[in-house]
Amino acid sequence: MSESLLLLAGDIERNPGPGGIGQENQPQDRLVDDSKQGKKEPKRRQRKPETWKKNSRKIKRAKGEAYINTRGVLVPAIKPPSPERICRCTFQCADVTAEQKASLFRELHSKPYNEQQAMISELVEVHDVRRHYRGRGGRARESAVSRRQRTPWYYLRDGARGRVRVCQGTVCDALGISRVRLQALYRKKAAGLPIEDQRGNRG
Ligand SMILES: [Zn+2]
Image 1 (cartoon, rainbow, N blue to C red):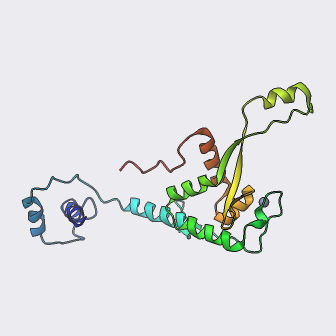
Image 2 (image 1 turned 90 degrees about the vertical axis):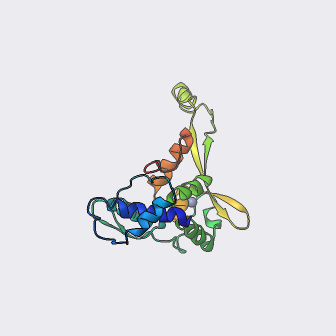
Image 3 (image 1 turned 180 degrees about the vertical axis):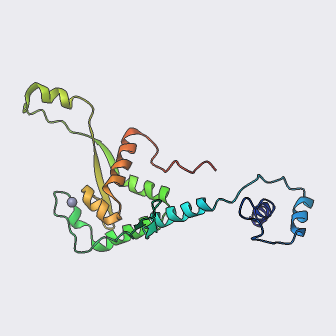
């Protein structure tokens, strides 16, 4: 590990890239040491401060911290689930304790983005819509439901009982994620597409 770090450090010193010249005046003898050890010439890399900025924004965003977006607008920190907010829908939202929600929130926002996606994905299931042919709506309705239809079922982990089914709003509230993000993830999952962020993963 230290070897690769050294290599990287040497690499940066040798190829400071535009704008990086003279910022780090390391002694030149290390350069010689590297080549003496017969290591393969590392690939040229250039400094890209704009990438660092982007990464720091990504990390802050994943953690739910406040950050400045690409348009220079401050995006406020995500609020943890409010203990007062209890959903009274037909699902089991009211059964998930405030502590459990807060714990899920902390767990999610301690993970990097793609691991968050995996965690959220475990809480969303793709279900075929159960078809009820009650004769309501006649022929047009029957042909409409004969297409394959799917719907998301949402869950939250509940310490005592494993997991309970909840509504979309409670998942978003507990995890501090937007409906847009949850729906996008569901659509990808339903379509069998990767849920991870595919950008900037080309090594
Ligand atoms: Zn609910």
